[in-house]
Length: 257
Image 1 (spheres, one colour):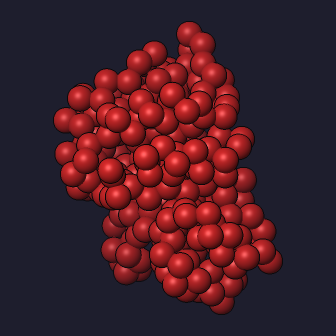
Image 2 (cartoon, rainbow, N blue to C red):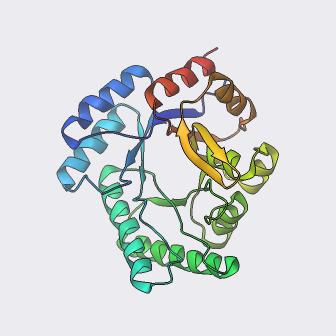
Image 3 (cartoon, rainbow, N blue to C red):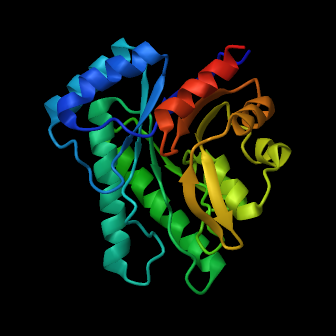
């Protein structure tokens, strides 16, 4: 049906058990994994990272990284912006050791002026990309579409960043649903014509102001997503639900039918 889709969970666990975890993911049929540096960059040793990356390549598992949550490229305090850039670059450094393709990150908040927020975040991304080129790290940075209406990261804003900076992107379909109360697949296809898509997906609980929390993905939700995804792209889908292993297995089962 859609063999150009790779599924995987958002988590690899402790450094001590990463090799066994990757082997288990391979056994289950997963071809992707996002390493959660959401609270800290916990892989610190270059040899560890290179060994994990080597094993992932041997098993055909594509690695990505989720940068720490504590980021804001539009902070009113300059030291916080600089600290955010350092955190993203630190993820990129470890990612280059791992051979990861992408570092996903939450770009920031609006503050008092949305257009000014866009310019600040755009400039921050350009500075990070300049540094990546200087250090010759072959890794993409991907601002993520966000699920709360008062947080920077509508699909239009992420698409605009891609056009203006050449950065990559993460389309989080659960966040889009929570933010917009619907998913306009045709609009998303037009906004992101690129051949490669990095996608997040899960069930989600949301209210008027957007995302509340992730939940287990229902079979019908998987079917809806897979039916509407473009067939001419290479797509990595990372599941972020509390039951991500079972959810990925459900998706593989649907895809195989």
